[in-house]
Length: 266
Image (cartoon, helix red, strand yellow):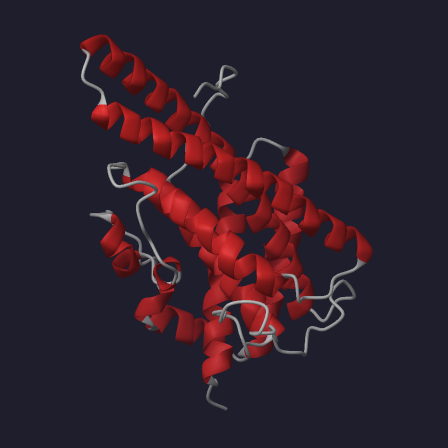
């Protein structure tokens, strides 16, 4: 029986998740983490087989261009959708008129999208108490990151307007430290919420007990909130899109493990 479009979309998502777990198995030195990844990888492969038995799923994944990573070199913030299609569905803009670091602008755009689009919609997904409390805790971290971004944007513009050479040097150094800290803290946040929503999505796909409205659609009161990208989309699709969005954001930022700058300065 031919695969439906929904099945094909789910297979591509599962394939990308499996590659992440395969990467953990290859690179992690933590035995416990490796074992956990192996367990999750087996679940994903079993799910792939259940969607398209008799090799149908594997033939689809091997034969479609979408099965291969579409990532490539970033040119500018305006071109991000060419290499990261899910990420490109959200507005990508500079954090300030003179911000010329593409990774900084991508991170800022991702945080804005998370606050304005994802947070209102994902709040409609009914999770068990523990997961609901963890989801709520993410917003406090997001608020801190938005404050960091605002200070960084002001520093960038101050550096552009500076006249005295000593002021220029001081502001450039300050900008470098703030950018480094912003990328470190932002990257830590994205990795954390990606892991969180990936576990939620996997629970939904396995019909687990942690999500109470997995068969509903996202409904946002447009009298109180702006029109939302997720309006009318199923909870399953919203969770799937969220996982892919965060995965592409992390890939696009190419985040290194940077040391924390203890001396955050304005």
